[in-house]
Length: 461
Ligand code: ARG
Image (cartoon, rainbow, N blue to C red; front, side, top):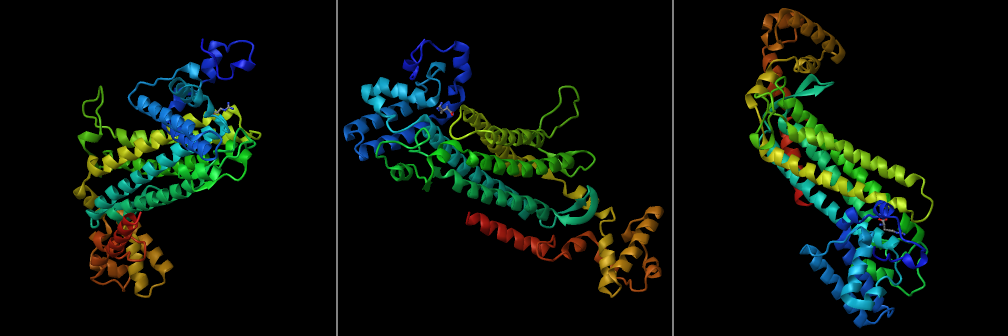
């Protein structure tokens, strides 16, 4: 087989199975365009500092651009013999540009190179994911806007608690998503640091200009310590943490959709475009999208855990273990992007809330019991006393197979003389929701204001 870049120091060839075991080209090919971009910045710097001539720099950049074109046209297909994407690009560059190609790796190591590539990749992915988070929020906001006065039971312990504006429920996820967006912005600042020029571990003997390459690549800062720059992956772990939280939020929403779509809840209908049937049970329509999102959440958590464990025992500086960071990152990125896309489509056009069913649900429970207690408390009855009294009313009503709205005014007044005709209006579901007009509450006025704030925030995102 072919000569390895490093084979001069070795007596005999690598065992073919070990070559396959060692190679990362099967997955780090994903980094090829970032590798080319990083190499171009490095080549420009080598020319600018006089480490190579400007003609040589030009040739390197032209060769690298040719590789980019070949790759995009599907003409450049590196194999296991190339070991990794960095060797593959260098090999092809030397084929194209001749001996000058061999100068590219002056004052550089694959260690600072791979760190640079990974950061360039992740920076771009974070930008994509943030855009997707904005789109997802827009879709939720549109749905919320159309459902301010649609009521839905609110739960604690998955027991009916107090009715809500459906918009308020959806806006809770908009808030989570907005924090996810913000969190990724924080993570971005720690991805946005250039390790290029850290060399293998100790820097280089050449008069390089690290600020110049960082600038070329749009990095805001450079690593202050070469050992740290080539060997930490804290930025990747932070990304996986932020990605995991995005998945937590998507997974909780998914779980709700799955419940809502069940016959037991029957709050939403899934459209045909976003659900599938069963191979045996003809009546089935399954909530595949939210189920898959809930399921894929575990993969992202796994990658976070995997990378934490990968890092914890590594002595300074680079260790080959670090090659294992890539599949975790790539898969987490693909998973989050895929889930965000699917959930955005689901909420844009894949499900329909059943307004009638929701209205029926909120009118047929004791979720207005708090409001009876609040009614009495507002008339001067100490809240705890009112609460105890209403507890008795609920017990009585349950035994009689009645709801609170079915009690006669006489019955109310026997319970407490403070009750008057307006108790019926006070416990009607719409009023129960409207009355929770405290900041951040479900009252319609609050929800309208929250919608405006969320829109403003998105517009300035
Ligand atoms: N394929 C390697 C990785 O992904 C590139 C860096 C290799 N450096 C080395 N000294 N073996 O980490």
